[in-house]
Length: 161
Image (cartoon, rainbow, N blue to C red; front, side, top):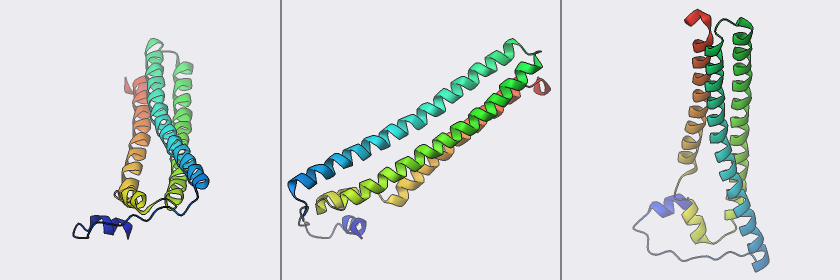
């Protein structure tokens, strides 16, 4: 409903309804809001760092496999480690996503106690649209991990040389 009110441009200027919180409680809520927003940024950054470092490790394993192509024990170990790494990274990416969703819920609850202007501003981007963006990026990260793993296996496996 708040988002619909924002999109209605024919509506006369809105009256701001201030927060009903006392100053100390309002300050606490602002601090909690900032902590949650910082946690989301931290988790997002770690998602990308996890993906990037995994792909770099895969590149290193490809190089190692190319240096000793006839050592089947090493090749099998590289492939096994790559599968374990992929599973662990995908699990971490999902955990970071769940953590971000928890922090977003906290932001929604905290912002409901702020002024009506604050609530109007937060409602500009729909949560459905934001979820599509977030989960599209998560799927991209998982796909990049899996593609990296497939390329590693194809490049070190003697069957594909």
